[in-house]
Image (cartoon, rainbow, N blue to C red; front, side, top):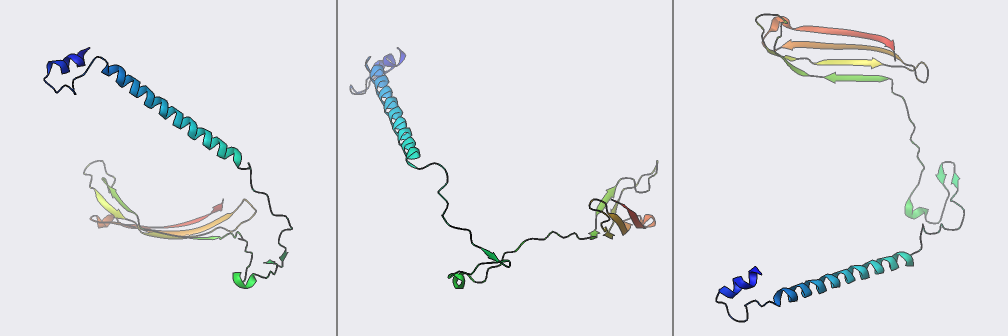
Length: 173
């Protein structure tokens, strides 16, 4: 073995020098520690199983009695009403909104603002816009769409390319 010879060559106190029985003692110590750890894990698992079996499975039993009556959209009167205040049962009502308003101010960059083959020039475009759309229902799944949108395209350097766009929309959705 390598390590007993290593320590034997050094001048160490007698109490520190390794003996041939040291690896056996170390192996015995590690085996007993592993066995103790395994017993602790097994004991913990047994305790957890016992706790699971002690509690009743499922949900707690429901209280015996009739449900609280509802009178005209309100909960029935009870002696504790003064503590709770006035209670009202509310139900959300889905409502269709036919109008849509759109506002936006996108900013673009183009490397060829004039769309030419030679002499391209890049520029920044600011294009604020607004629109309103009206979509009344015709049937449950068919809607009529009426809208108008205005958008202004303004170039930062090339003012001669500025323009406006007015779009009107009519159709079925």
